[in-house]
Image 1 (cartoon, rainbow, N blue to C red):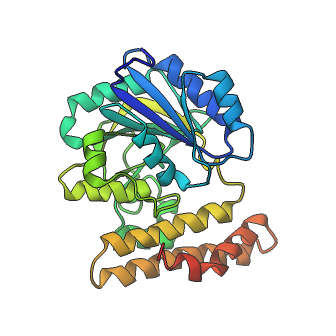
Image 2 (cartoon, rainbow, N blue to C red):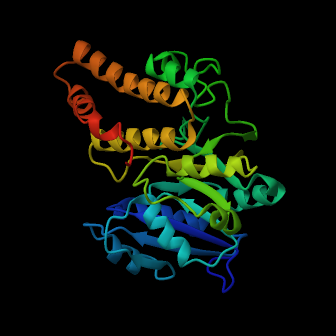
Image 3 (cartoon, rainbow, N blue to C red):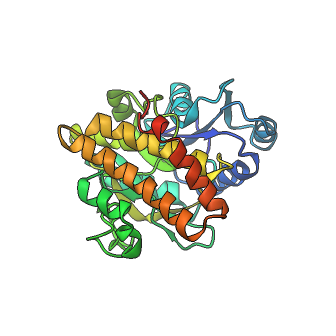
Length: 311
């Protein structure tokens, strides 16, 4: 039921140099969404490729907005929501592919669990293997410690050491979580407006975590259904690992300033620094001439910047 005059769901994508990938994403949206009245909005953040031309030619039914500048994910989403009409809002990454009616299934799930306010599904890698980075727990001293020391990776399938990614959850059951990824993120316009949407101060990464933690304070708890599955490539807007990691760390530090109180705040910041230092040290020790070692060196060298968050 694409493009009804009164869409129930607004699907919003923010694009930045993702012309090749977004065609697949949009095609899968229209092919796999048959039971929900939708509108699709793409906000292009001043792409340097031919994204605008390709989308306009291939998908004339899409509401295409040229933001004129790279506003980041949150800034682009704010523009998209302002131009949308649906009661429900689906934030969708351009490097995704909808599988087996996932949007219809997620909408049905949301209506069965209206009290949760935020709903998501499970993400898969391109080979259809599980990608566990779609949901995680809020930062704590224990899960930051296990991450910084590598225990969460070594014992990735345990919930003791991999608390952050719910290591023992096989993604085959419904589960309430603390945070869901912005790549496939369903909420209501009412909750979006109550919170104020994604904060554009988070240029990219951690903005959905900030939204989820704010929602939790209002009594909402994100929930995941294994029935709605998508492919998520990840990192499509970044050509370098270091650029992505610096933005990610900056977002994590900003979350600490906003959502961690008292004596725990410097501990959280110290453990985030330890995580980067440990990655940098181990790469210099065992793979000193590798591209990965150079990238982690860059991240470490810019610690004075990202340790400030967005301040």
